[in-house]
Length: 444
Image (cartoon, rainbow, N blue to C red):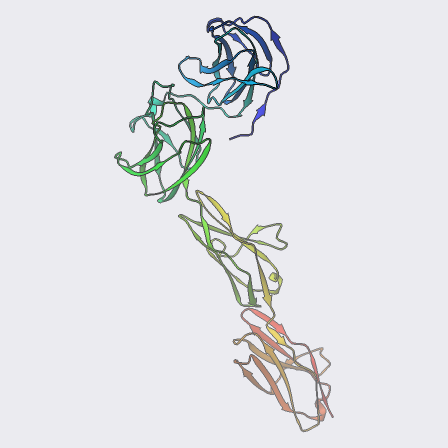
């Protein structure tokens, strides 16, 4: 319910009561203090006009015991009755009462004392900032006259109990389901008074023929509450039937919407070798799910991923060094709402894990250089430079690649003329290419 806005006024009047009957009822202003005289066993009426839904609080006191009532303009619907109790600290009978009328309009406050007494009272109105359009409930009592509603929209209704004279009120709403799914029925109830149920109200879901397929008790004898129920609905027409079963007024609000997704397996951090495909996966339960992956450099500013798989449960991206440290998250949604996965980080690992080292050998001895990588599928090309690393050409020396050890070794018999030559290895894995450090051969 919207936040309350309290209207404060600080004026009042004193004098003899001028409201002996409803016809003569004097209209009062909120937050004014009124001091009047009550004749014994003679009710006095005061008129209250509410701009819209809200809460009424009444504080009253007198030399004798006083009772108070609040009615609708019809003087049939009663919101409650309250009595005063003697307060020794103040030497007077004091009482308070409150009510939560659903609609704006005219209401009557009634005071009565068995003995002549002075009466001091003040009425405070707290605006709910909500406007309820009053309708005749009988208009929506059956399938043929049911009000059509839409999934995802919040609606308000009203059970008109009319005091002790009417009960077993019924409201029926029609809804057309286009997407088969599990739907949530959210209900909010506001009491117009503290109600003692003569029968616990409930909501039913009927199929297009009026057959009951679901039923849930709404509330027990407590104050304002919210409640949710879930029901599986196929494509078609259904009816929501709210049954009151009590003798008092109360208002309710409700919304039928597709059950919001729930993440069942969250995304996790991923480590991927440069050039290989990295995958982030999220699992969720729900119907008609949609996925959207987002990427961020700092975890603050997010943009939609441009990957082809960005709208699926698994995001697949080819790793590059520029993506190292990127953060990802996925938003899973349907008509009922959305849920966001944890933020995860992508670490892109270098292909090369151990660089070759400079080598010094005697002429005629075997010289070799070795590189170690993370990939068993890596491809290697050793190169040689005779001008200090300015230009490079592929080496024709013997190369041994070990897929199990993830190593590549180039070896040859060293010649004195090769002293000062430089070597390096070009390593390819997936779509990435990395170069080892340049190493120098010294031949003694």
